[in-house]
Image 1: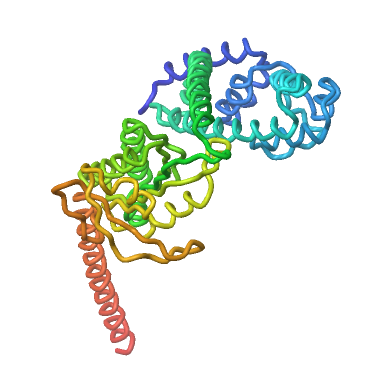
Image 2: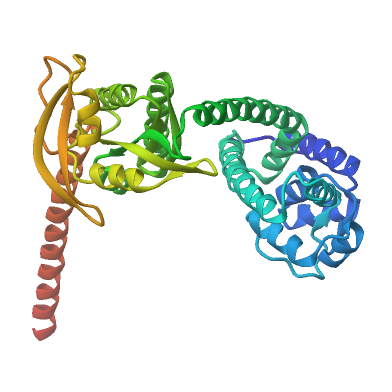
Length: 407
C-alpha cells in the first residue's frame, strides 16, 4: 500500500514523541532515521524500556550473584553468552535476577531447579515471542520503514501491557490445571509410576506439499493442521504435548478417550481439502512426566508405530487392545506384527468404528493438491516443449549463420 508524504511525516512525528518519552535523544533518532533502522530503535528502546544499561560484571556486583550462576541462567533463557564488558543488561535483568536469588535463598528451589525452570520458561516464551513478531509483520504497510516502525511502537505501547496480563492469566490457569493433575496422579500412582495413553498423529505428504507451495500457503497448511489437532484433542479431554512440524504428540488419561480422539483426527483430516490424511498411533503404559513433556518406552513405541501406519488409520498395540476389546464403540482388526527399531516385534491392531471399513489406500492427498500437482506436471511439460522449440530455433539460426559465413 502506498502512503502519502504527509501521512509518513505525521507518523514520523508521532514516533519521535513516543521514543523521546522513552529517553531517546534527537541524535539517536536522526541516526536511526538516516540508516532506515527506526524499527530497530523501537525494538531496543521500547520493548525493554529502560534508561540504564549494565555490563555482566556490574550486574554481578549489584546483585551479589555467583558469576557462574548468572551465565547459566542467561543460557537457560536461550540467549548466547555475553561479553562481560558489553552493557546489555537492564533494570529488568537486575530485578529478575534478584527475584531468582531470593527464591533460592528462601529454599523454595535450589540453583539446579531454578535453572531447570528458567530453561522451560525461556523456551516457552521464545515461541510466544516469535509468534507475536510473525503476526506483527503481517500488518499493512510493513514494507515502509517509517510506517512499520510506528506500527511496532504503537503495538508495544498499547498491546504489550495487555499481552503481559493475558500471559499471567494463562499461566495461572495452566498452573491450576497442572497442580490438579499432579494431585490426581499422586492419588492413583503405584510406586511412582504414571499410566497414560500417548498418541502421535503424523500428516501424510507434508514434505511433498511444502515443496510445491509458497510460504504463505505453507503457513495456512501448518496453521490448519495445528488448529484441527488442538480442537479435537482438547475437546476429547486430551492434552497436546507438542507440535513437531507435521506431527502432533498428545496424552490422554483414558485409553478409550484416546481411541476416540484418534478416530476423530483421522476423520477430520480426511474430510479437509486443504490437508492430507494423518497416520495415528497410540500406546498405553508407564511414562515419565518431565518439564511438560513425557518420556519412556511407551512414548517410543507410539512414535515408532505411527511411522508404519497407513494414512487415515489408527493403530494400537496389544496393551490397548486388551483394555478395549470388549468396548462396543470400537472394532479391532489384527494386522501383521511389526518389528520396530530398538523395541522388537510388536502385535498391532487397526481400530475403526462399527460399520466402518478400515482405509486400505496408501495415500490420500487433498483434492486441491491432486489438481495442483496435475497443473504442475502440465506446466513442466509445456516448459520442456518450449525449451525444445527455443533450442530448435536457436540451432537453425546458428546453422543459417554458418552457411552465410561460408558463402
